[in-house]
Amino acid sequence: MDIFLSAIFAGTSRGAIYALAALGLVLVWRGAGVVNFAQMGQAMFSTYIASTLIAQNYSYWIAFVVALISGGLLGALVDLLVMRPLNRKKSSSALDSPAMRSTIPVIASLGILGVLQAAAGMIWAAEERGFPTPVNSLGLVINGKIMPFTAFDLFVIGIVFVTLVATTYFFKGTGMGLAMRASALNPEVARLSGIRIGLVRTLSWVISGVASSLAGLLVTPSANLSPYTLDLILIIGFTAAVVGGLDSLLGSVIGGFALGLLVSFVNVYDAPEDIFLAILIVLITVLIIRPQGILGSKEVRRV
Amino acid sequence: MSKASSYGRKNLVISILFTALVFFLSIKLDPYNQGQLSVALMFFIGILSIVLLTGASGQISLGQGALMAVGGFAAALGILNLGLSIWLAIALAVIAALLAGLLLGIAAARLSGPYLAGTTLVIALAIPSLATRFESVFGGDVGLTIAFGNPPAWLTTLMGEVGYEQWQLLATLPFATLALFLTLNILGSRTGRSWRALRDNEVAASLAGMKISETKIFVFVISSGFAGLAGVLYGLRGIVGPSVYPISLSLLLLTGAVLGGIRSILGALIGALLVVFLPDLIEWASASFSPSEQIANYLPAMISSLLLILTVVLNPGGIAHGLHHKKRRH
Image (cartoon, rainbow over all chains, first blue to last red; front, side):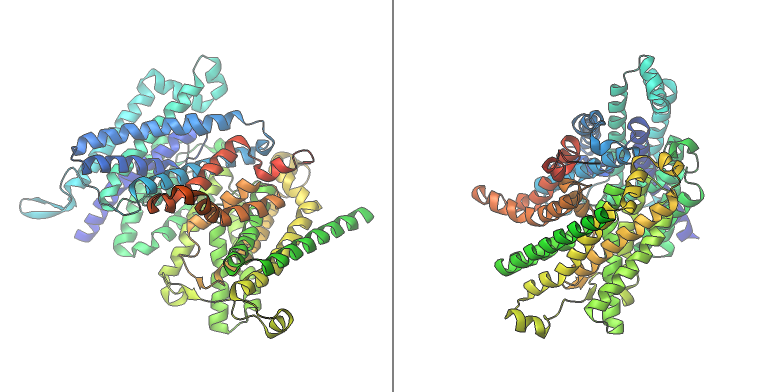
């Protein structure tokens, strides 16, 4: 029973992180029509910045905030330096079909991932380093009894919950959020009604960058930091986003938690080597049975 | 009729010239570069699989490395358990990859763009991890040991001493030529035109009577056969294991395909040579300002990734597109 409970808690805390990663992917997909495979590379880069600051005796929280800001800046840079120029090239002969138009940004994002990983290797070497947690990550003790969850689990779940509430408020309660939803729904009409599409796009890259950097900061303590550690989170985040529906913010969060529980149960009751296989089975099953995901809308996957 | 046969003759001439050129190089080059050139030929076959899949029919796959692994493991199991010769093992590898491609294609025909990219990326990670999972069959992290072996006696009597790297190159050459000849014929034929129609406008292609799903699956099968062939040759250099077919291999092939020109056979050759010889080239070019080891290790990855971004943004057609810009017909 204790094993079961700790699997549930570990899964929920992991799921919260996957939800952030999935949220980051969905934000850019809705906002800019790109599935950003460089996302966790950006997160890796800003986590390295935080790790460097901590190594120089800055407090965890200063490093935390700096990492989130640099995550946002990286997102903006990716959009301004690569995706916008790419968008302007749509008349080029290699981009003359819908199939290629959706393929080329994917390839560009893989290039960005490669650049970020190589840069991290050059700056910080390939040696793996640990990453601290702001609170204790041993089993929490209440009334002399060891609980099946840690203080860090609670911290992760809490901070992700706050982030999700803030994101929801931003999209439902503010003018800019409304503008972003409008341009995701129909860019042409949004542009005609005076919304600055370019700005909205860049903003979705920024928010996505912050969200995925947060995911990176929260997941790294349980895995050593190296240029390639966060690749797994990208895969899981993508699967979570597809399970939830690639164009649904709420869906991506649900997908994240579902994947967190799945990974946790595979870890506890089976073997960690099976995680990829389990993810692949879930991904293919969802794509075959319900390609639009749990909450996605159907017409997104038009021919 | 005469036009068709002259077209076929042209393809044959190109293939023969290609063989002669590589054969000439195999005699002139030193063993290290013979080995490198043989890897470039393997990558050429792998990149042709991307040219067929992505360039011609518009479907993206980040999982060609996984199909290469399927080919490699099938051959290794055939050699080690059934005692097959490497030639039969290569045939077995291609058949296994064709079957894997059929399964993949059935799933992939329903997907497009980023969905397909993400799914194939997960496949690229999941397939090699199977080797660790079923350690007793696939040899775990270490993998299985296979090799090109020694050159046959008739070759040494014909050519004198044949080094290991030279034999590796000469054994790879006929398959690279075959892949080249097949691709030339496929892309120049009615089949190739129908794939391009699929890429350019799926709705129009289906209105014109094309069976979309069947065609997509067929493209996947053919492309997987090429990838499997590349994979078994790549494995025959020594080891078939998860570390031989990492996700970075899939991305390296994609990089080569894009840099050279994703729609061009010549581009595939340029791209393969580029990704294989780029590290040597960079080492040679950076020798004068001797970068630290840490930077030197990541310099090839940095430069090829930067080239990938620059190509996509500035010249999506790749190098080959620039070379024969004027006579493009698609």
